[in-house]
Image 1 (cartoon, one colour):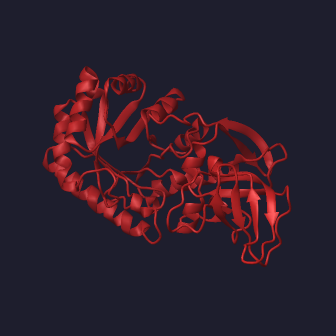
Image 2 (cartoon, one colour):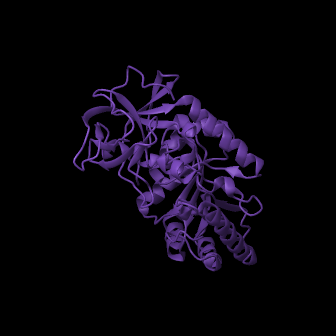
Image 3 (cartoon, helix red, strand yellow):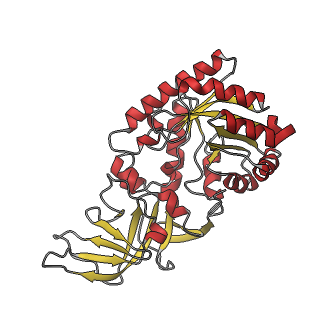
Length: 366
């Protein structure tokens, strides 16, 4: 990425079109070489133009987090959508799923007999229009059932009239130093065991879905049939610190301006203050992260504190402090949060502003 275009007022989210396209093509090619389908998680970017690039590169469909996100991407032409979380479906959710299934192939997650039964009951005659994957806990210990319990959930879903197509898991514990390979191995073991239980109960288990950005390229195609990475398309400071991307792979930065600077002394650190705070960077900071974000062109600096509209950056002693008014690019820790905080983004190439894209699925949290 080059300099911040003159037409940008800070803070603003920039996406480098060249880096974005390279990320899309590289992941598509790598997953294809493993014999896996790619179903990128669109909750990361929430932008129809990026989804279109991913689908054009060969993605089998999109993963989404909510019915609202599915509605946005279906309205923009996506016709194969997986809601990769266990849903509790009431009357209003059922009506929305019925409308979606009239224009797109819809798959939802479930991890309990009770939720599957409720979903089928609410969908009624339309239950057969919705496919389900049983969620398996492969070590993240969020949602999902033990692999041995997969068939019990599948039976309940089938009794409720839903189409059971397989199993899925989210190896979220891959988002920690040294964990991607172990999480990928546990994912494969869990999917294999769960698929075996379904097949023994006369379910096909033709879809075995896994993969996160840290683990997707480690996923073994001998068990899984598809992966669902999301962050790879834009990158962020977490992936950089995990070693799952390089600086040149990060397509998204937040343009900011130095509004305060202090040389420090008497135990007070040298620091600058930027006009980009938690309301654009997000406040997510894993315990292992070295700061609240990084600076794209000054990797030794650290964002040590965030307020709503400002970031405090401790500056290395052996480097001159930036001047007041200087514009710097910040790498958010967690890009998915940043994308849900802004209405639109600036698309740039070679330091020039190309266009602006609307974050169409922003705030579609239900």
